[in-house]
Image (cartoon, rainbow, N blue to C red):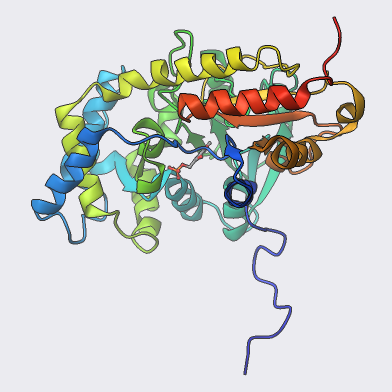
Amino acid sequence: MSFPEGFQGKLPDVGTTIFTVMSRRAAELGAVNVGQGFPDYPIDSRLAACVTDAVAAGFNQYAPMEGNVALRAAIAAKIVAAGGRSVDPETELTVTCGGTESIYSAIQAVVGAGHEAIVFDPAYDAYDPAIRLAGGRCIHLPLEAPHFRYDWDRVGSALSERTLPIFINNPHNPACTVATASDLDALARLTRDRPIAVLADEVYEHVQYDGRIHQSVMNHPELQSRSFAVYSFGKTLHITGWRVGYCVAPPSLTRELRKVHQFNAFSIAAPLQQAITLYLQRHPDAWREVAGFFGAKRELLRQSLAGSGLVLPEAQGTYFQLADFSSLEGADACLNDVEFTERLINDAGVAVIPLSPFYREAPAGMRIVRLCVAKRDETLTEAAARISAYTQGKRKKS
Ligand SMILES: Cc1ncc(COP(=O)(O)O)c(C=O)c1O
């Protein structure tokens, strides 16, 4: 007998993510893809060589469940080199299948029926489904436009004895903002004396601009003891397809996360873990180059779009740039972000990501789209040229 027609699984409202949809359509239409967040340039050839070395050295069977021992030591050394605290790789650090699996395993480890997670919209799309699969539900609070700041009083009013966890994404995708030390202090004050874990998505930790210093929960004197801090080599080493990330959490939370991880991913690709280990050992400062690298690309995109009529809010971090098209004139002035995205891919041949899918309920009249700067310079200038050609004649006369 075939499975019942119309069967609804546990996430009936979830479709294919906007990132996958836009990348697929960009490929079909031959559009320039500055939508989904992945580099379109080659990886460092020295890193590629490390994979060959790792395979030749025999790193081809199951890696330890918690992660390659030398990799965890190298990560702990990198954390200290970046000004962070001393993390015990044995009890506080777990290598996972990208940052995504850290998030998922952490949630499955601590969230159950009745829990209410606080999520700030716009939000990365992996949080809400993971909470629901764990039996909880999300309370979506807005980051206050136009600067996407936290309203901590409002967070305080939303807390209850069911709250678990509070998500914080810093630097923030898609808002491109970074949390300040006082944001973390406010979060600490609100969670003090309450059994609330913090899920800190810090995958863009090293992508902060204009001299900003990353404020990590991992280094916060209070938050470090209640936080899962999530990281991704996909972002830091330009290897999103390798799917290697890690979670730093105090021993009590790490223990619980590993219980899920061992029955979920179990362990992460052994040669890739070893390749990253070799690379970090041979080039311990590689992560320091990331902010400058993406900062230059951010500037190139901003300059290339200067005459386009799009307003580009300051990008403080992440490898994205928001673009507000609300000051265009004519028919485009009436479009929402999803419609504008459609116009760009069909008429300009450029794939971008609308902002409203990052909300449970997007604010009415959303007119912001997201562009990814982790692309070859030619991709960025071509995308900007096509967008500028499209907006020609639609710009306000000054
Ligand atoms: C905010 C945020 N968190 C988590 C992830 C997932 O990281 P990974 O690709 O390592 O799973 C991404 C990837 O785009 C992201 O933007």
